[in-house]
Image (cartoon, rainbow, N blue to C red):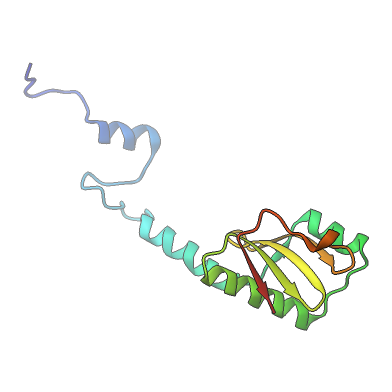
Length: 134
């Protein structure tokens, strides 16, 4: 069945009307709208700036419980280890800095847990797919 001269709106028109997508008929951003490329660029630029690892609540508690205090130099080396793990495609990494062991979620740039060598039970680490010794 072919309807000519239909007064029914198109899907795109309804989408613009109800979802306020801010897109023109050709799919380009409307004036004042933000394109996907702009959003992607902002996110990737922000990722380059945040090369520093952060500590999960669990890891921060472990550092406190185990009286581990990190120097600025050790934190820089930990960041370097996480960056090297990222370059190699490691997802969950053991990063050794001096006698300290850190399990790092590389994609999230987050230290999951931390311990010193005396606390590492039998020196066995599980659920990692790579290790970096700095």
